[in-house]
Image (cartoon, rainbow, N blue to C red; front, side, top):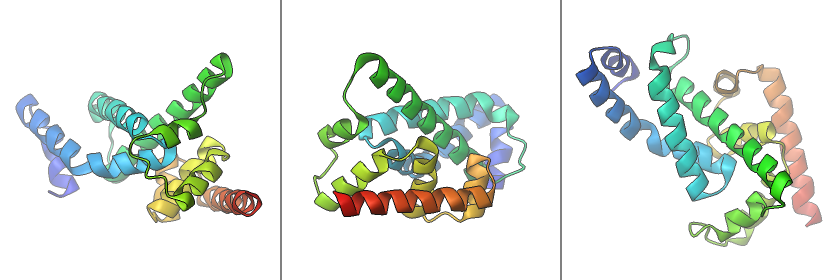
Length: 177
């Protein structure tokens, strides 16, 4: 179903709206899951973040003005939830001396242990959350800078610089480890 038809049904009466929302979840959950998974690292965290994102999407449906594509708006909410999750985790780690995200990634039962993947994950963990989000959206999902700009609410120039710095940091990490 195309976005415009889905939007019309989401703005309709409560019966249609609930059915349309279930279709929206079916249509976008896997895509949002992988976007979030690349940012947060673990299956369990990605599931939690995506679930929170869909709750927020449901509660904010009335706020969607249609100035961007629906998929862009959905990604913006999911990425912001992922970045908030990372910030909470870092605060929690600082408060409790808890395990790092990286250790959680390796303990994840969905992590296959491939050495290249492990090294890339390690390198990504060194990036600030915003750079990690830009890198993930560009590298893993090959989104155009214009769309990433709409998702993150920043300029294309700033994104290009962030992506360049992220790639350089990852390259440096990979060559020294």
